[in-house]
Amino acid sequence: MFLQTTFLQVDAFRTSTSMANGRHFLFIEGICIWVVNLSHTRFSKAHIGLNPPKKMKRSLSSVLASRSTRWRPAIQALPAEILESIFLYSANVALPRSAPIIGSKLSGRATLIRFIIWAFQETWEQSFGDPEKFGALDKNLVSGDWQLQSTILCLPWITAEFILQAQQTWVEKHAKDQHYRHYLPRLDDDGDPFIYGHSHHFEGGVGHFNSQECFEADYQEVLSWKPFERVGSWGGCDIHPKVRVPTILITGPWDEKNLRLLFWLRRSGLVYGLEEHDRSWEIQLDCLRNAFIDAPEPNVVVTNLIDLTALCQGLPRDIAREQRRRIDQRLKWGADSVISKEILRQVYGAIGMFHDGFGTSSSPK
Image 1 (cartoon, helix red, strand yellow):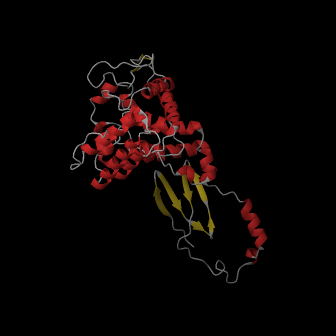
Image 2: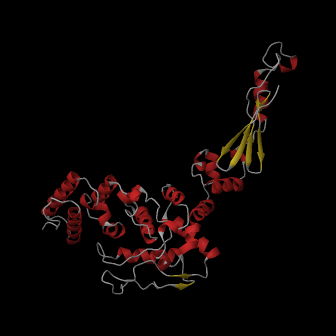
Image 3: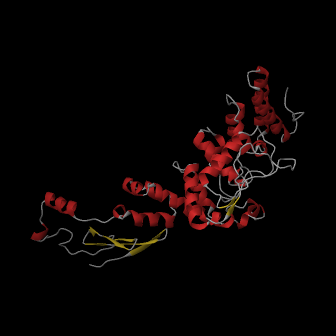
């Protein structure tokens, strides 16, 4: 009899499989898992059941009993600390879903916080707290794994609060003495100083950063804005600019959880539609309908978080014509508030700007 061993490369781990005497064996070396597998084994007649020796004549119950008590190491049996290391270094978000016990070991809040830091820390190290530094930075030179960041943002457990706690943990360890200035606009659209409606010290300073307090101050400020507030550029670089915005944050529905996460993305410098891979007229149409055209009340906050120009570009001509017709019909009913009507007129005009043949892009009366 001889053993044939094969080697597989799975992510960052080396796995070996072989089998002896028809029995499976599992070896763990560090955090590398060695599994033994049968391949091309030569057997004597005794091994294949011809003239079996007496010692092999055992009852089925005794065989099953011996197997049930035999220790069988598996990845599920690894300590949580080793599983967490595998989780972080492989960056495999499917690992917690591979088995219930693995998911249980990797679902602790501390583990998830470390996973978020693992994905975002390179981006934070480069431009945390200084939006002007980000403004002068080529997006192709921004550090961080945008694909991993995109994947994390689509996980069902992710919230703005999770990310804020992760960032606070990172700051306390790596950037406690850095100057931090809020990412809200400093100027309005005319170039004049922007007047904030809240008393928070938005200019910041050294040691000013508190993730939760600063986020809440910024969020409440934006909630007070008028629809399509005329402001200058705003947003920092807490996220890689190539990250894909989760579809549900663009199409809605926007409950408080999704709205806060969408605001965190916009505040962090991510604007939907700037990247070509973001563009999808179907997604844009769903957003226009759910946020404005078909909404019982057009969403004021969304007008300041998603660029209307990006939403209206690229719609098929017949689709664009139909949306303008529906807006016109809704406005004639006269059931909406003054603010809602103004939002609908803005959407009507923006759609018309990018489609010739509508006569005028201006809003209906």
